Length: 283
Image (cartoon, rainbow, N blue to C red; front, side, top):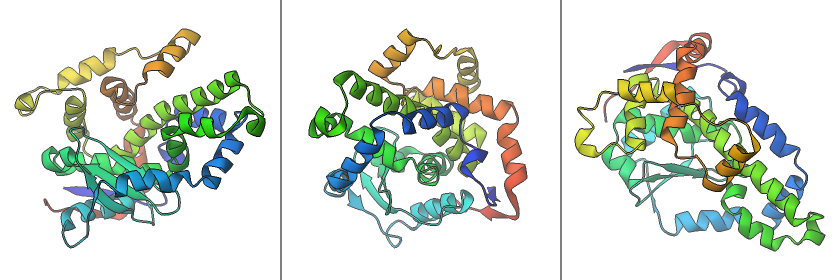
């Protein structure tokens, strides 16, 4: 499949407006600068990375050339210069995780490598590369370890009350939800296969494997269009804070395919395409 390579693409070209607003709120939340400083002072990133490198297999271009080609393709399309190191870890989820602000590493699950098509893998990988481009990694890592980090930061050190600490936790959590929408847009810009992305979302939503080849993805379209999402009310915010929606495939599909249907996705492809295209052979 020929894919557009994108020229001088910026974060603003595909950032979800709700994520941009949420990021602005997070950066202006009292205490975040102190948390970021302590995050580095305590060497938290190294601790998180050790959890993955200590239990995941590092991959090489020689042993996994097809996978590395997909990662290089994603970095090229999104104009990301630093190609992350690759790891694989055992899990039954279709997920990947990227860590490392200065030196990124990407950990992909065995389920992704075993069962996803090339286009679906490109979407998953593109999501992670977009997080690098959007500078999401720092706040994502802080979110991973925020409860433990707060225990290490006394109210005297931060000048924060318990209530304000909860407010900061909510700001981090809410941004993490909205960041999923931006990552999905980045994944689609990389794989450039709307139908293949819809197939992936049916799997993320729990479609049993024996129905993958026969399920009509238009049913996903219909459900996504009917999804009303959350109203920005205090109760809904509280419920989202408690239960989360990072893996809510239908909510994410609603946002992503609305972006496609409005023509905004195609506009990015047209406006940012180079004259040449990338041709990715089937692995």
